[in-house]
Image (cartoon, rainbow, N blue to C red; front, side):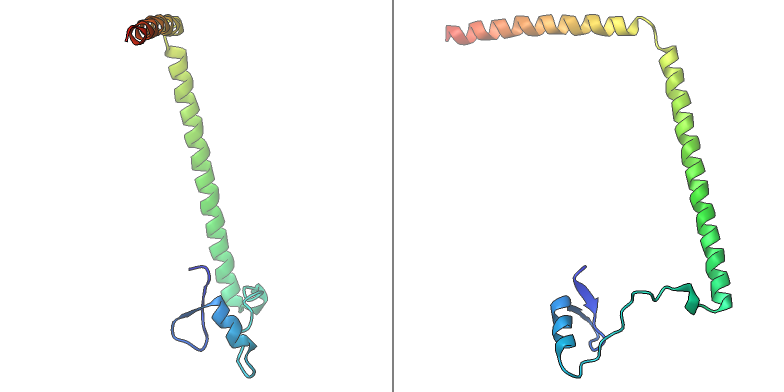
Length: 120
């Protein structure tokens, strides 16, 4: 409902087009713009202190999540490197050999299929 706004004169929501029609009517009250309403200059000292403490805590939490994420990635790198180092050196050769066998089998089956289709 991105196109719905809270109407100051209605209990529910109205569309943007309805709001524009209302604001173009003579004598209609216009709601002040929300731009600039989050300024810290309007906060009291206590509110500003609470906001700054909240901001510090949020930033601390972000730094901690980032640190945890980096540690997790480093742990994954170490595990994958260990797996790669522990893999048998013949494993790649065996996979290449198996791939060649399957390609040969595939070629034989294609030949049989083409002969069977031609015989029909």
